[in-house]
Image (cartoon, rainbow, N blue to C red; front, side, top):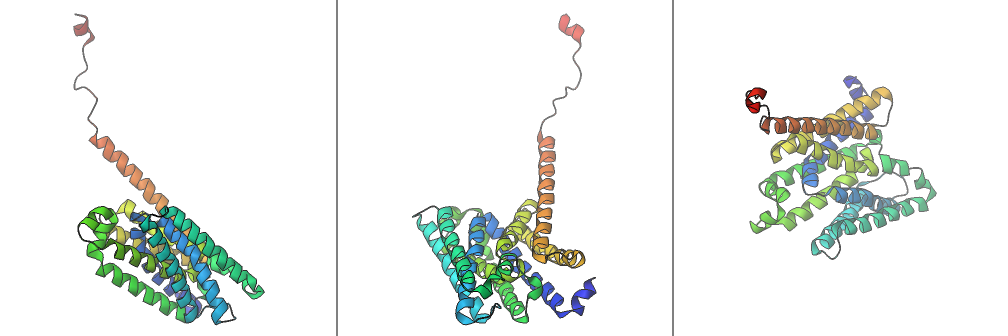
Length: 299
């Protein structure tokens, strides 16, 4: 079964692209979850549709994105990300309100732009749910650059990320540039959702940015173990999802997400059982050493 992936070029490219996407999403997911940015990631995933739509409209007449299209989409989504981070940091409105207002407008704008020309309407499903089997070599190279960029950013800022994700106020008091970390993370999320849209789609890329990190927080204790579990889970879910979809003739993107969610349910159940056992072992025994004699009480 594995050999069949390399017999056909498009299957091999799909597996490589899925692995690179998993590395990027798995490395960013713990910070998305621990900093409470799940809704922001979802908003950026939807907002990326606006950038892709404008890029397709301006630079080409066909439905296949080019470097210029992806570049504009990343810039557009990055602008939305910076706007959300700036508005929420200035506390002019609540962060969830800023995210909701920005992403619904950008998403609606993208749908309108794609629907304005009839030749794009047939490709809306690809934007929503992805088409990993149609990944081309250019997109593999772009995903490779993304994975390398994410890894470099995480390694370079690892010393400060651990403080920031667990206690932002304490990190700020200790001299950590929390604003730089926040903006950098939002920009990387924006680039990840744009380049991952082709694989799992706008509606599913959020799951790959949330579920691996959530699983890592359930199984890991320290940031390095949480990150390791997150990346491993993302890679395993992508590889097994490709195998299952190829065997059962199912869409790869949704299968990957469902398998990741299944692991999340298992991790949640395991964490619940572990906490119950820990609580039971910590409680003092209520059983007396020797049963009282009723005759002694009567006397």
